Length: 209
Image (cartoon, rainbow, N blue to C red; front, side, top):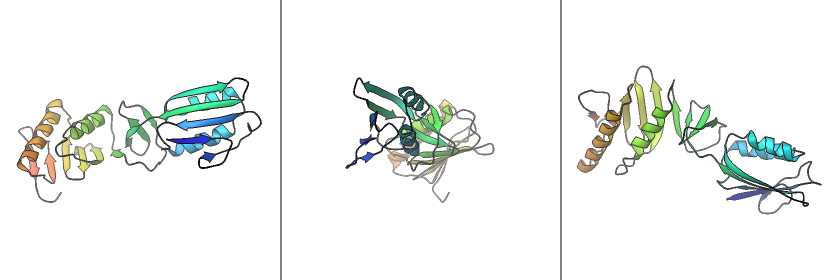
């Protein structure tokens, strides 16, 4: 956990502002310092000059999941505790999404997240894919990228295997993938490609992608 105080200077990171003679603002980021947006937010707080402005700045931060704001009476002190949203993937380098598909602005933060690209109409498909692949704990596929195209449908690049789900993402197809993955684990073979696009079964390729 990192703490940010708008007054003093020591082992933490501190700032002064136009409120220097009025408010001491203590900020705690409960979820660590993760986004570039947080740095911008701190700069905006430095230039705030009223309680209402501080509250308005907070309401504008879409990366904040929840917060606690306390103004100490008669002391000109503000205590602010913030919990960040936890993004799961980045869509088309435009937005972060958390597990509940709450969308907030992508700010080019250096995060180890799943990159998703393509003309996606329903983001729920992305979560279904991620949950399905991550549920195969025996193999532990590490998802790097998910791509959707009108030609190939859904393709998932993992550290071990390229997984092709095709255009139609059905519950049956997702279950078939889990069953196939468990079978592959039992026989001790991890293919380079698992192709789920066939109605009559699954195509496995042990060669190069």
